[in-house]
Image (cartoon, rainbow, N blue to C red; front, side, top):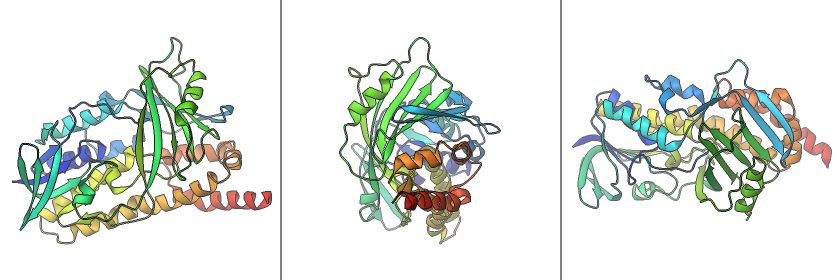
Length: 376
């Protein structure tokens, strides 16, 4: 019997596995796909996550970026340099996720990929985790199987309180003379969201996403038009659509000897759709909680929910308020929140972990609200 079974080998599952193994706990990591596996994702990672791990992520980083270029409806560019900050990491998820899992394996994590979970059952003092060919036993479970996973439902959670953002991405090689110096965001072309171009050493991740409303939009056409700005024709390339579990208020993340992490816990930033950093964070916090529970702390899992709400949820409440105003009238939001260099630099500092939404939200909301009232 294992101390813990982690279902899902994305950032939160890999983080949970690593930190549990680091604490000497026996861990089985189950992943339905064969690793390394492709995962549609822009791949922007805040460099602050390095502080949570005692190994170097450099081998899994494709590029480090010091500049962000914002545009309004593919015009009015505003370039922001992340001065005095660590550069943003650009990663490919097949490389990044697998690298994290490999670090856990070095500490004793047992990986079984190509092993989908078909059901779970609580039996007296342990969880039975069923796969197509085997049944595994563990004292604790971590559900890290993402927005489309079944673990939360099987664990008895009610329908997760979340917004499902729509995203469409394409991975494409870059032209012979690419501009790989900047991350690109375009506002105004997509309702309640943005279009992005995240460069990698060997190509681009170009996509579009909506994070608040459920408007029907032709994301495929919008993405294709945007890609042409970089000299790329993506009409014949394979495109990927996927849901995003946007944070929409605090909710319980613990139940009988089990925890939710990552997108299973609906922790994606409702303003920027950042998901890798909170996934790594919740994975680490889940490992700490389960280690403490195994050590006799009967309140450890409850404390995990409280800790996630404190460390991430409180800040996401501010992010949601800013986003609801910004996306309501994006032209004004762009003028006040992007075209102003100080505001753009603050957003860069938030993403890099040097600031939090709560540090700037009060003034930002007041400025946006005052401007909107002046427009009426």
